[in-house]
Image (cartoon, rainbow, N blue to C red; front, side, top):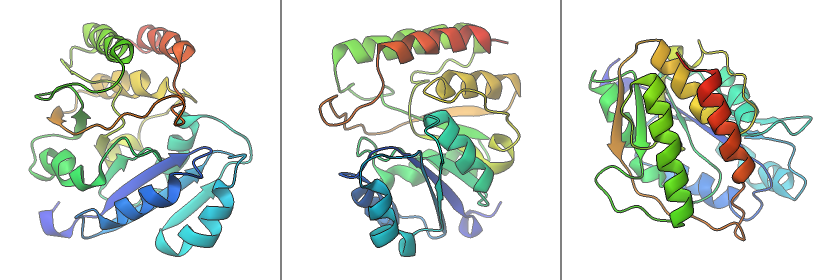
Length: 230
């Protein structure tokens, strides 16, 4: 694809993000990407997220899809990926932990012909932030995933994953919650496509601020690494 003529599809899954959804959309709109397709998937929020999406955000984005039942992050991403039409697709969580100004950094290896998939690593060439327990859990899960995929990643659980659209749309995603991360990593590895990591910034939020991943999700991740191993 031509560097100056690509479209980036930004998939934003959200659930009960009334405090953040408008802020993150404004950040995405300000990102230095010329052609953007913003696809929001609301996963049956029970707060005022839907009202905010309709009253303040709908005119600003390409598509808003509402799930009739809460399915989880993986389910929301599966819906979002199916609606993407851009050349490259990237995941953007609805919280404020990741900076949309770094999209060019994450997709550069794809645009330069160096990779087909690129992960934005929170631990590559940077000092890790956040709770120590979460850091250790992420490193353990990444190491376990690497053992089976042979990808040598430093951050398998990162939100910022960018794909050539035809790659992500060719994968049958089965995990509905946070098991998406190890599942998609294993399935990408199985495709023998070029995967690269780049360093990104990270601004972790606490459980009190709405962080949704927990201990059970960590156990599910271990199961998924085994289930989808090569």
